[in-house]
Length: 237
Ligand SMILES: Nc1ncnc2c1ncn2[C@@H]1O[C@H](COP(=O)(O)OP(=O)(O)OP(=O)(O)O)[C@@H](O)[C@H]1O
Image (cartoon, rainbow, N blue to C red; front, side, top):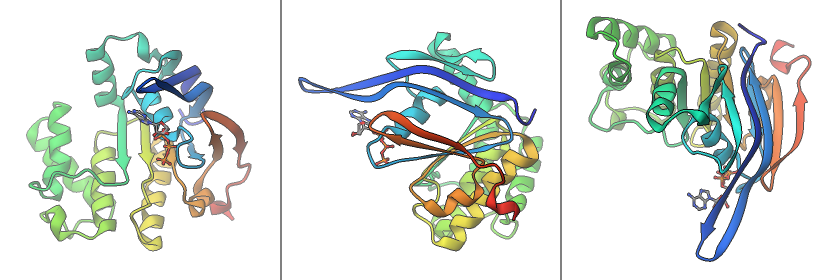
């Protein structure tokens, strides 16, 4: 699986209308990502990174262009099938963690598995195992208000990993974290690519994360300016 094309997008364009003004946010962008690789998307604020992720993951339909995701033409599907694709194959990690305040760490993960129709006993077993794998075996019953920022992000990562997605999207996953927690977070994403063959796409401003990237893409003003394969990622050194 590793090294195979997971995402292949061509000619993605998107504009937003604000009053009478039309702002072009993606300008015919071609993008691809491979299983087993961490692809980092960097660029200034407003350059279209989050919009690109949204178009690649089935969150927002582009005005033009095509996304082949795991061999399927994503935007040719009807809304329900796009949602189902996202549920079955995509994991998301966001800057703000997006945890439910009323659920403890285990329940956060079980909730997602319930949506994926995993039987209850299996969901309980998997939630515990995945939380242990991100180093939260001692925080299984804690609520978000009782967890540090780094721990909350690890719950969010556990939740995203629990359904074993082939496509993992992280949008500024470390920006609310101190550098140690940020490193733990990126190492877990890196592990998902290397051990499970997920295609991991990370939008970030954080240059420290480049050390874990197989590929770094720079965006500016709705276009890809550069796309660099890191021949020997520094983390191996
Ligand atoms: N729903 C929307 N309606 C109108 N404009 C939007 C919408 N979403 C994004 N934009 C605009 O599109 C542009 C690109 O936004 P996007 O979030 O993709 O950029 P970004 O590179 O991810 O920025 P940041 O690094 O600040 O998160 C911005 O100017 C933003 O204001």
